[in-house]
Amino acid sequence: MFPAQRSAFSWQVRFNLNKGFPVRRIAYSSLLCSWIWAASLAGCTVEETSGPQLEFEVKLDESLLQFCERWKASQRPDCADFEQAAREFSDHPDLNPAIQISDLPARKRDIVNLLRFEGHFIPGKHSIQKESDPVAQARVLLHYMVQASAKRLVSLEKDFPSTDSRANNLSRTERMILASIVEKEAVSNSDYRKVASVFLNRLEKNQVLGSCPTVEYGLGYHRPFLLFKDLELQSDYNVYKRGGLPPGPVAQFSDEAYKAVLQPEQTNDIFFVYDWTTGKLHFAEQYRDHKDNAAIARANFIARYGREVMYKRFDDLYYEDLPQSEYPKGD
Image (cartoon, rainbow, N blue to C red):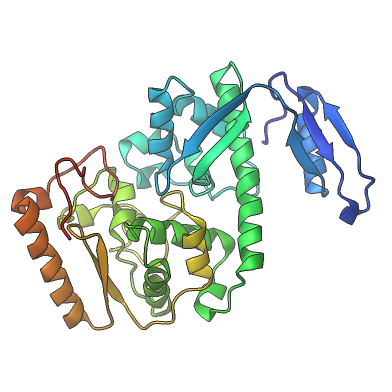
């Protein structure tokens, strides 16, 4: 059920002329929040009145587990507070489908309801109404993000309409999932459209996605080069073993990643590999060429960081560059 109560602050509802309503602003008490939600579905725009504000940042390509753990470290609502607030949104039509607990690693199992918001947090700096109660603060943030996300996606789809048959076969939720994978795979925030094309080609050919960050989302840790035992993970996030997309988005994604899914590069590439030492992606259409690219990337890694680090487990990282202070990149 969508939350029917809010802590003590006011909302404004601006009625939309395009919907035939008169333009007027009215301040409502927190007890009318459920009515305001219904009104917003009827074409009204809900706005918070001015008051003490809380500024915060969503980091590009982070997971919601990373986000709520950062908040806990700054003495803001913690993961348990976000999870409690997220339960109140169980019937919200814009959220991702519920995720099976068995598909998740231990730390994510405690925030299974919050994970339905994965991909809906928009990277960048934000300002919301400040609340003294941590669960109320989490509730305000979740409500803000799900509304902002819906507006963002509608705007992107309008401004960058898809003309690619591969992307046209995907629902909005599936596009969000793929955009989050593209974001994580494009580690250096480049080649978004080429990465999107590779995964759309794989989907079109009914091949497994073979996405390492997606597997890591289910594992709960990072390894520069996954081991065979990692790929035996029994989870729908193991897209080396199962076909199609994973159950939900795996990270927060940029506009560029979503635009890349809507308007991908026109390529026949099926493979790519990331060189952790240079921050560059290398694409290939044929497997033999991909094997050569992968061998070079592995040799570069060993030469710079050593063989042992290749398979080292990093519990505090999620498919991201190793700390530059210890593992600097080359040219």
